[in-house]
Image (cartoon, rainbow, N blue to C red):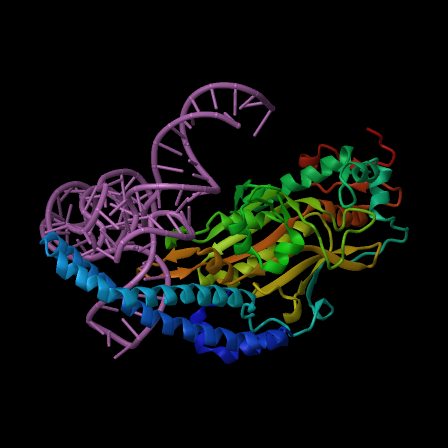
Length: 430
RNA sequence: GGAGAGAUGGUCGAGCGGUUUAAGGCAUCGGUCUUGAAAACCGACGAGGGGCGACCCUCCGGGGGUUCGAAUCCCCCUCUCUCCGCCA
């Protein structure tokens, strides 16, 4: 959400930003906001004057009552009757106007960074850099579930019976590899100065509406029936939510945290759940990183964050590239976003394994996460988030890139202590 | 699940119809003192918003109500804590 003062003073910049995001349908909202804001301030001027008068007069009545001058008090009471009605009327309008203003402000997109490439949708995202050689071996790479099955490492049939499409059983050494990757990711981030956290896996609606847009909420979040609780779609939700309504001391920044959680997503709309495999699923596990910092540091942190993911994948010798989200593909709350993609030798293309974003102060404004500055002035913090690794999907890249001609999969040295084995060998029944 | 207690500014905590314009402590920030620090003393200090400004308004978990006037009284809801039960 933008600062209303910014919209008031820079309506053209807000309009230009909407055009850059190809959301011209939202252009009239800017004028709507300006009007509501104007009306809101008019109401305040009038109603506050009346309230100030009421306060003074009420005190006068109290004084007269104390002195036993009841008649005089009664007379003043009668004079106030008209004002009372007007105050009620204006107060009601004040609430209505403010609600409408907030609602409208919520759907106006955040101002994107000048460096963001302009484009309509994900087909216009821009590749920035490649890390490692995207190798295509001279033997055929099977579909990832087939690789897993060769190790008796996945049971999708049972998962469909038990929970439905979009769920999975990981079994044996593939499951151990999955857990090992998460543990390695945790220690990898701790080694880079991040503090490890295990957050709540359910959050209340007021936190949900603070961390994401309404559209996302509807298409992503599972609600617990009969309770004001939602299953998190990523630990970013509970990790950023941790600071709702807080005023942080400036010296406590930056907060650099890494968290583990299962993630639950409806995946309504867009692409839907894939028939076979663990690419797009309703439940997965993820190691995440978040940063809460001063506004002037957020771009520096943005670059440091995505690089962590690249380094993580490179430490396991998986080729990756970075792809910058163009303006039209950028979620409304985001200032800038970049995907880390891993190489798929089977598909001979890269696919998304992580997403790094800075939301500027938009998320902090919604959640009222403020910083108490050294000079006594308060300001909204900047928030960032990035994936370290989400193993079910990441396993696809891992298995495809490390598959040997004999059907085995080698475990990189960095992972061996976490896995407890050196190699996945076909038909290795557990 | 049962019973009880509670929700007040960054934090602790008073207030229970009009001298509260939210006391006081702690923390924080200035200053005095000191070689420096600590201690002591003096002062500042809640959040959000409106106004060019002098100033003003809103906020005591949320929502209704009573009243000229509500942190304070009434109703509803939510949450937290303690004890019991259950449980990894």
